[in-house]
Image (cartoon, rainbow, N blue to C red):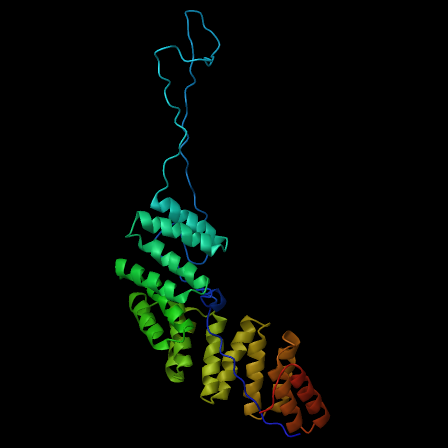
Length: 329
């Protein structure tokens, strides 16, 4: 059987949100609204409960007597009520409780607390913003967008709400709207490396690879440890058939994360495209070692073996690829 080289390029789409958290992207976008919260690592809320000290009812005579509680109220006297109720929770109390639930991954309960915060204070921009994050974490993207809309209406200069809304638009495949929001983030915060990264991803999704590379250049300049920025810049170069540049970026990914199977796989594909088949096989070996369930790695390694005249190894790899679900076109 003759092989056709199959270059499947896997484009990592940020983090999403999905977490809107961006953790997979190697960076964080911190909220500047409130000291008590961040989107990535929400601090434990501190609730200070008022302690009411109740003086016991006592009977005193000229001679000191032990403190005693009377068993009955003297006729004609009305007992004073004992204050036992706690003050009602404020909007900020509910917000902090929502943060606690969100930190524990209980987004539904977090939403319930943010609801209460908003009910008590309709102008609470941070409550809308964080409720939007919780909705996004649950995959309820339209409701998340509505909350981000309201947060932006209440605080038009807050970059984080634009950023999260832009990421959600990207998750929904609405890349143009996502780019518009990320434009605003970068206008408000020109040093925001993750905003450049996400806009670069959106441009790649629209096959505007040169613009993607320009943004990913900025992301790398601002955050040289962001392996995913190098990775996606390498993929963009690969799409433009600039394979040597792709390899150099993937080299950097592997340096930062030696267990990144996708980086070895795509560097192997770039070597295949450059007809450096032995180097391709070495990278695909490593990709398979890290992720032995990738059928495309077996298939392309088989194709490289065939180019080197190693037909038996090529057939074994093709068979393995098909066992894992690869379908020949």
